[in-house]
Length: 309
Ligand code: CP
Image 1: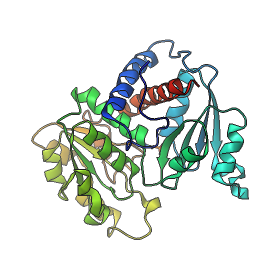
Image 2 (image 1 turned 30 degrees about the horizontal axis):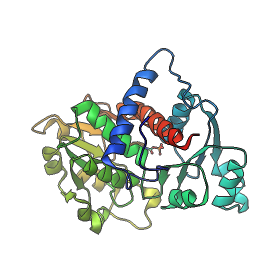
Image 3 (image 1 turned 180 degrees about the vertical axis):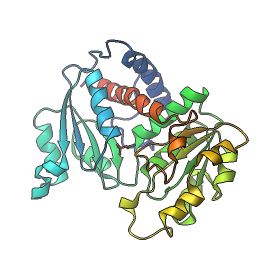
């Protein structure tokens, strides 16, 4: 079995092209498995995985849990809201208590950037970052790039525009790092106030005009405005945001060529994307969700394999 170059999946930063190729090839095999009548393999039998979520999630939490069950792992779920965190217990104490119950791997979502790295430095089992604040969301970027590869045959040379709240989005940063590593051309589009000043140092270009950005691209990844991470008003109103940066069916239909439309979810229908675009034939939003299970199976399997877990 081939190995990843990392012991934990903390971000796309730190992965090599070879790591991503290996994850994709492993996910190809697992995608076949989850489309069979019997969707389970015994690969992680006797491995116990804890999913610890300090922030809300629908897709990522369910997708990891399904991936673990398809691999025959034993799964425990921890939600901060119903835990002793509210009584003042620290992150390290919480996780060490979970590990004392003989857990082999931890999947964690946390509102603080760097929380997964911090944990990886203090515990002895593999950590998978399921989103740490506005920093990284590596499995989302992997499933997004995998979905582009599936739809267009390759990621290399494809033109991808990421639209919206680039400043507060862990999906944006992880996608940029992953797509650039795989040889895509990447542009970001959004209001000036939601594009961080450092963004061009990542090798991406900026286009504030949505129509021009869409006319340039092969793929548009539409992001949600992360109001929960915004401490000030970055634009006058959601209505104005939608007028300037929302993707509508008439705009999509007016483009010179057909593009692929993506969204990591959760969608705010009628804000960054209209309902008819979310459900249009160009949209691969539900393919992304399906591919998320195969990608997470691949990541869990590869990390467990090299730990002898
Ligand atoms: N895409 C994503 O991370 O969705 P959730 O917040 O529902 O997990």
